[in-house]
Length: 481
Image 1 (cartoon, rainbow, N blue to C red):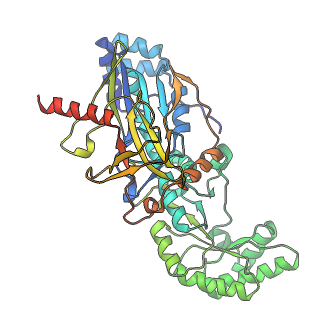
Image 2: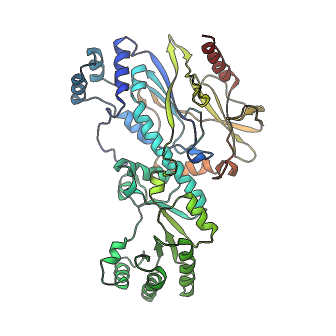
Image 3: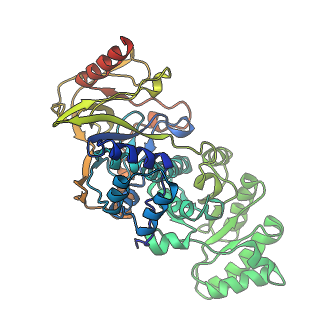
């Protein structure tokens, strides 16, 4: 992917800079803090999410800088100290960063990214980190749901024109590809990100000719070996499909094989069944039927349950905006401070139990069943704990602590990998195909009960006893105040 040069350092909530100024002014800027990125709930009440956006986060962190105009901007506000201005003028990113691999299956309340470094720096990157990871993880997760319901049929992302701006269209296409879409209608995503572009014609092509048949013939003349015709401009069954068949016959006579037809409106279930019958009777059993028109996982599920004859889907606005639940609620919270090399866990407490954070510098171990290869549970530990060694573990349910499961005969795999060390990238970024393939391979190792749309089984994410004790003692200290 080409890295288009633009400075996004000031794309941050203003209070990130007022806090940074305060830290620096008070001599606390170089104190070491630890922040975790995690999320509390899977969108659409799903059972899992897909992590996406790490590549763009890396690009952002590698290019953090303040130019002269930025310094002048801070000066113009009249509230920033000379020490802050000088620090920003000489800014260099020096943090350590750990993250799970992009494309990973992720679950609530576990650290997906951990950032350690000077307090003003780890604070300052919050907004962009959340913006990048929340958006792409949202779209990747939504796409994964849609692809699963399509049950082996191709899903292409068609949403650019409904996306919330250019970046949402481009990075949404990328996230959709990671989530399992086979292509995008977005040529930019193809050119700059290596995501296959797809597309044929719009209704305007058909309308621009004197007749539908003339329009189809013209398209077939230009694209004889990739002819897929949009048949719903006027009347699908009375003109669209019959005209398509006529053009397919003409192509066949010239030794070309047509691709198929697309339907973008009307009673999709009825029209596709009738269209399939007409194509088959004309000898085009291999011609595909592609449908679009405000598709999502629920509409696709209903269509397939009705016996609709569909080979592929184009999914637009409801995918690119994740319309049914358009917020991925990832947060970025302080979990520890360091004092003379000692890591001091920190906790945020709330009357809303879900918002109480897990303190400390942590690692995640994913427990894979050795016999089946499936994910059994995730165990969140303090960073310096020994890895689980295969001994039976009692794992508690993430929502109901009275529910538990004993996990044995497992392989424990650490998920958090170091990405930056003292501001230097030490991680080899995989390309988009590797990320996509990894996402698919990991999703294949998730139990079907966790992946189902309705009332999915809640995957077990538990804390080690040592981490649980730290959390409990911090809560007790606060309650005793």
